[in-house]
Length: 234
Length: 264
Image 1 (spheres, chains in turn red, cyan):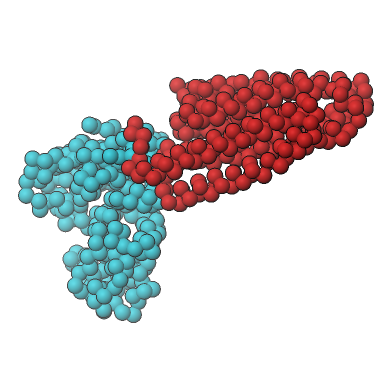
Image 2 (cartoon, chains in turn brown, purple):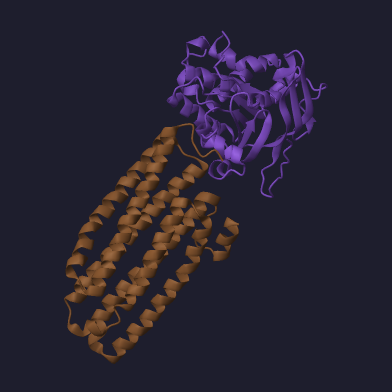
């Protein structure tokens, strides 16, 4: 396929948008990492940093949206270009949500720190594994987006089940703790919100993977069984 | 390249259909085996770069090429419901043009009054009754969204109207004979955006009564006004499909390259 437009300016606008999304992805990834670090070390300072940085995430989202609107207004994109812009817009929205989840984790960490020592007995570090998994999913989704790699996208969608299993397992464990010692109920609920936030990050990575298939194949595989995505990329 | 058209189950009725249509200007083959439906009460847009044959194809529908020396048609264009072949020599081109009228790129009003411009086709057909003509002219001008602007000055010469008004007058003239198909050959390329918007709006309204085939260089216009789109290149029909599919997810790489501006 001729991969360049007659208008080189259009090409550079699309390239610039793609790299802005990657930039936002990088920022959001580091937000997750720091939020998880704050959780593992009960670090109020790191949690505070995450909360402050969230504003940069929001500002970048708005900036990317402005650029997308401007490209649509001036270029009237069609077909693959239009699908790419739709995907960039939705990926940006998903990344911003991941940023929100990181902020939510940071706020929970601060709330947990403010509570009694009962929390120390809870399996908070186990969430580190799930968080690492979620953050890896997001990184892979962004890599696949940069390369428009549909095979990688399908793999990411399949791996989301792992994260869901981690979440279910963690919830069962928390329930055991809460039954044994009612003093752990309040911090357990905070941890439950953290676990849910991590699970949501995985969902956002899956959404981004679905948009990759939409850009390349024109197939909308959202809300469908994985087999549909698999047959779309064949 | 021959392209076979498969009709989906929910397809609207076919108003006309070209079958393996070739057209030659002398020894130059301008159309290569074009097979394509034109659905009734729908807008079909023909797009493609200059020289792709889209205007040549359009003009076959009312035998506009008949006066070119050395022209030749092969294949057929079947017009429904009576299934006559428009290209058949035995079919009178005047009769064809009563049923298939045309609006050109540049507004071309006759040097006559507004009224006479619209009444022209009916007079050619032999219509004499003044009250009948007045009714038809009013209907056609209303149909072309021009009545409110010219009512009360129908005797004025048409060339004094603005470009956009002149083009709507030409549409009224094309509608006055109650055609079944109206051909538009780049109808807005000489108009400003406001007049263009008015014509596009009009196309959306008159398609309830007539079937429309439109050639346009403006792909966004094709996307806005048409229900079906055909992409042509060097006399071949490269892809034909529902406009939504062509502009969101064309099947052929050549179509994709053209509509996304990668065509070099």
